[in-house]
Image 1 (cartoon, rainbow, N blue to C red):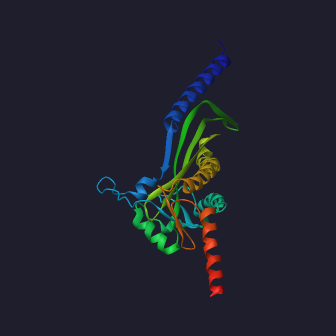
Image 2 (cartoon, rainbow, N blue to C red):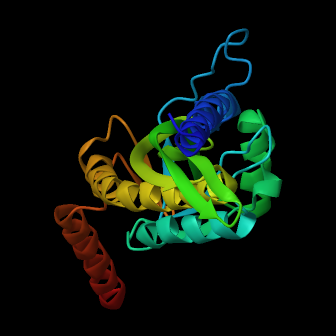
Length: 284
């Protein structure tokens, strides 16, 4: 066996050993990792639920059309979303509330006004400050997984091969909007939405891609939540009209009913009484 052939075998063996070492290091360094960020509407509203019973405030008395607030449930740690992105997403949701006749206005509440585990005491403060009756609380749960790919990426440089393990990334996001009636402490309805974002990146660009995937995950989850929200907004309006045992309605003019507007028969009788009174006054 010639010296040239032996040199080639030695080079191949060295390359194989280097690849094995790099692959092993890649598995050790990159392997599987997970990032998890979450907020909980239950933890926010009922921080002492295990030690203090939740008081029942009775049937909700709804002042229609009502003023509504909307906000993200506060985080305990750093948020994956900027305040500008939160406002953008909340505005998309708020636009669908404005389409309903029973909503007089909806106001976006900045995160700074909500305190982690603040409970209804915090909501009472927000109610007084912003003049709202109900609030839409948006919570989320996002997990990001990173797995080392089977195939590695090989970059040929002037000094030889640069081997980088490929990454397989997935971002799972769930958002949940819960509408609470603040005075009665009752949930009126809720609407969830989910998304799955998949991507591939080298470890060098992994951090940036995870940030991009995280934001995309929130955007898609909110977009998929909105059709569910529209259905719940319509269903809630129907329940208010047809379920007087569940809601008492106080109109902005001061009148009240068990769940619907003043019906046509009652309006007609009221009109006749007014006409009769006017006729009797003229006669006298």
